[in-house]
Image (cartoon, rainbow, N blue to C red; front, side):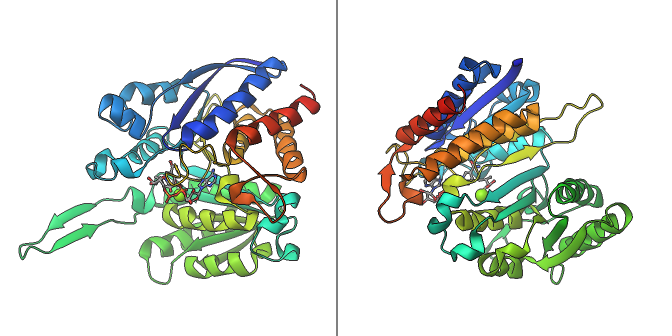
Length: 370
Ligand SMILES: NC(=O)C1=CN([C@@H]2O[C@H](COP(=O)(O)OP(=O)(O)OC[C@H]3O[C@@H](n4cnc5c(N)ncnc54)[C@H](O)[C@@H]3O)[C@@H](O)[C@H]2O)C=CC1
Ligand SMILES: CC(C)CC(=O)C(=O)O
Ligand SMILES: [Mg+2]
């Protein structure tokens, strides 16, 4: 049994604490059933941290994240903080964590659960068995590039500036993660950018092509412009196995891919750094959705993306494959039994809230061997 590993929980804002509470119950189940006993700590990030400290994330919290064996993150942001100075918005917390922990590879799997085939807007024969993995670069690109800012020109006109920058090492390291994943899956990798109109995209394409030829000739590599990829995901998602792309396009394409699975409330993610000499690497796990202010405080949020993020944490940070599989199986069984939060509801199925969905997952886990 895994013991004494440090796990930092950062629930954040809006539905973040609501869905984290359900993941926390699964963590308690892991301890109760003798599978893993974590040294747990919880801290404030995002708007919650702004209220308490004036900052979206403080240095001690970053230190704790650096010391942790893994971080489970909820979501940050909300309209009450939209008028914050830009560099003090809640969203800075997640960008800062990714940057400071060196979490450059954001793995966003989009598997379709059989029971949710009807929740997808696409035809059943298109989504059945679908399992796409999007690898999104997450410490570079336009979210981090310089120069940035809003400046006022001499004539009073204002100019908003963001810059997309990628270097070859940044592209190579994330592409390597994607090639390795493709090798273990169906052996196909689609690299996505806008090489037709962006130099950073052209360099991305050249770098991925060279890496593929030199080190991964066994992986079938193709390239696609990001606008076409959005369309192809909606039209014919079965053509994709692993997609590797930059920060902005990965953000957009993964929200789009979530709808193939039925809901944004279903998709987990793992954001990984490079292993050090001892094989230890920083890692953060979070649902791909945000703080959902429109449903926050109502007990309606789907907690499954957060619970599946915990499963990814067990899989990638602690090599607890069986326990991760048990959580995924519990989720699958709950969905098969017809339990539905509002976001994945289909006609004639029961609509339940966050806590009831958490209860159902725990019941299934107990059945699977608590
Ligand atoms: N990693 C993070 O912390 C992220 C934070 N955000 C922030 O979250 C705030 C809200 O952003 P939005 O654009 O509204 O995106 P969002 O992802 O929070 O919500 C988009 C839509 O999906 C629904 N939704 C999201 N998660 C759900 C769940 N678990 N169950 C059921 N329905 C769910 C929401 O109700 C909403 O209608 C903003 O401040 C934004 O910056 C957005 C994305 C990621
Ligand atoms: C900084 C986040 C709010 C960006 C985002 O939407 C994401 O990482 O999915
Ligand atoms: Mg996003």
